[in-house]
Length: 190
Image (cartoon, rainbow, N blue to C red):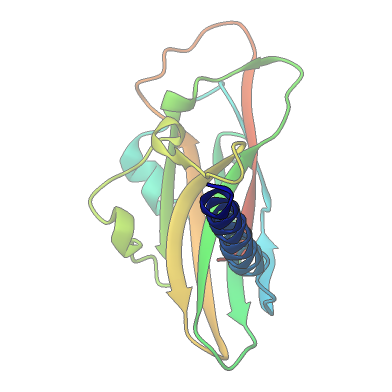
């Protein structure tokens, strides 16, 4: 009887040690992948921060074709930026948005239209026939305050340019109370 108990004890000890080693390996692998060393660089030509107010809703046609010229401060936002990969490997990346804290009432996310294009004003393939609104963007698993706009891949030693236009939807009903919406554009390697 004592031999049987000793065998079970050593078997249980072996299983526990085996599971401990496996969990350590899995933890090491996932933590290594979550902290990617990358030479991915983002440079803003215009507009890292987006700030809109509720003074004037804009049609989709006007919002999509806005080129950043003219006085439309806080009515239509125009951001232009590029992502540069300085490594010898292709790199996956995410463009995501994080809301800024505002001191007045906030415009509902369902009225904030977004249009992401390349430098030639071609719609990005993931959102080709769709004009997303901020409320439809999915949250990032590891950044609950981050909303994913686009996920893509950049080739080794290359550069990608983007333009993001943001405006207040023409379905918004104007009211006398001041409302604003503000967020920051971010990029990270994944």
